[in-house]
Length: 365
Image (cartoon, rainbow, N blue to C red; front, side, top):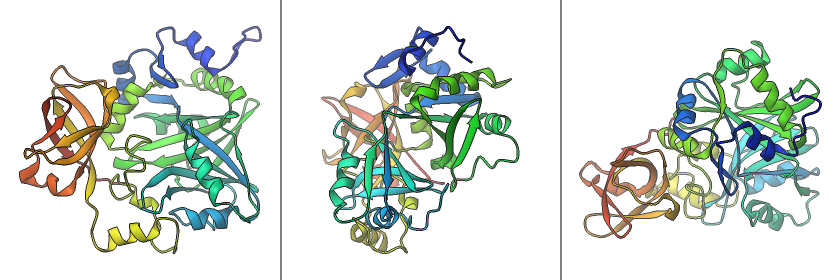
């Protein structure tokens, strides 16, 4: 724990003190020690990640669950206190507004989505609240989302919380009181069966919690992970993220999130398009892993992909900065007809043509 005479103004200053080699670009931590070291730790230990793009909204009022049930993709009107469910907000064309996690805490519902400067999700929800008994507030500045994942994360959390607590249940939220601070805990299961555990805690208490985790880590290899290592982890496991793969140009079918749509619940915004794509097998694109021979700057994403005839067939959406000298690894969204066996030699266009090899994803959850 922090010493009584140690003054740390905020989490950012604390991390600067703890990791003098930390490199940050805007709100994005590229790495704390080195990207390769952090990626290796994901493979063998326990990774901590401060989610730099989490938007946290509090919704109160008696109509909140009925409203969320009407406007989002999953069935949520039956949520009870300490329940958790992922749901998608889509526009009229069935394309993404955002992917979110809903958790219920007493008489309020917390929506965890993706932050941008325009607070797009918050504005979108506000637009549809008309006569309902709903009060909406942005509490992002008050709370912090800390993610825990990696090869040893299950064992580490069992050691931390005890064997009798089912940490891997994706439908429930748990509250913990540890050494004078309180936090809420839930798990999201991503593609490839990857489990990402989430802690929501007040920002002013976050440093004490982080110190507690490091103090009690025992034999576990626990370290912070920056976005460079996290991007490679996402690419390896086919995990879509906002705004790279989750944006107003894509739909849940294309990026492997159709399991967060309930086809039995009835109407929601975008429902007709999503149902029609499913019923008539009209999904035209698919997210895949890609290996590119050569290199181009990662800050120009998305990059168009053209076939040998010069036709635009998709785009590269995420590129890892952790590449070999001759290859780049990434995620791409490509037309399904171009993923057939005889059409896999694609090219990426950025003033020059580069061979792109496709590795399809199973999207197993």
